[in-house]
Image (cartoon, rainbow, N blue to C red; front, side):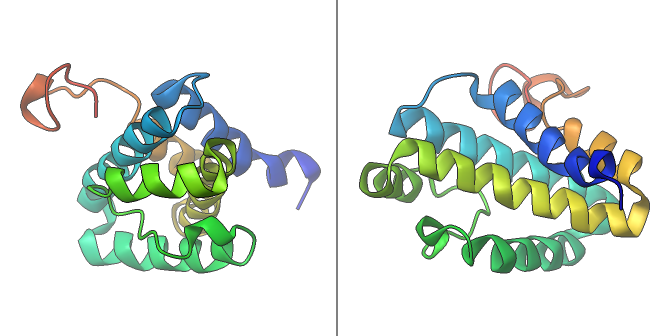
Length: 145
């Protein structure tokens, strides 16, 4: 694998995180962003690979990322755990939790790319940051995700 190919998933994950969270690094913003990220990925990718397929990829991605980021130990990254993520960010640092979220997303993109191809995996994941064609019916006001 070329260095360029090896960087595609991490770069896509960073861009996605930045599109969702921006440059903020407060525990509250990290928690809200993580909730949007995992809720959006579950909804969007679950449509394409099924809920159990998505969960299998997420479980594998978490297993890999947990060996690098101790702050992921108690997190499931399924969405709806903003309070726990905020508490974890307070304990481990918001920057560390943000980096761990990016790492899980990067591994998820890489794993998905092995199935559907790297370009398609990145395209599907980037849909999380795009406005929903259904407007605000999916995940709250604003229509994002």
